[in-house]
Length: 162
Image (cartoon, rainbow, N blue to C red; front, side, top):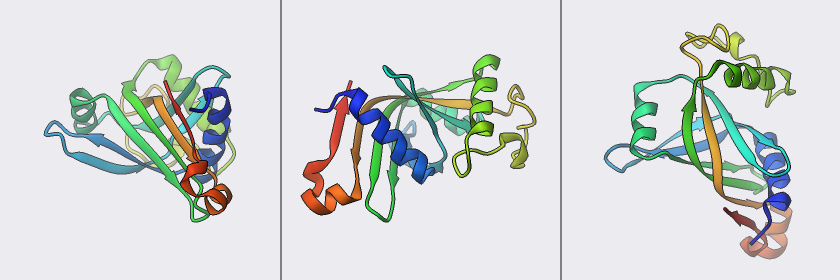
């Protein structure tokens, strides 16, 4: 098992290079549902958290109410991959929304963008009612660089579990 301090920087490097990931949640009937999202990951040296700019739709609320977990999967044609299995929940406090909005604005493209400038209805400011955050708190990570996969197969993957 890999220490979080060793895998988190690798995970973020892969995730922030690929940018878009497939995120799966589970509906009230226990069926998986996937979508493509754009998380921003933060690592402070002890904890890794992810943030997704989103809208508080009834479906998102129902899915997270039924099962507060999400699976985030990144893959590149080079065969780099990064997977985060996470506890997930919506966050709507003004201070956090403003801070994360600014993180997205200040990051270089393609990770960074202006949330208010992409035309999503209700995303005028970070405190608009139509803008919330999906908070991702990983309990399991798995990463593998393509060159390691080609040299050693999937046995070269790094795995961490809380």
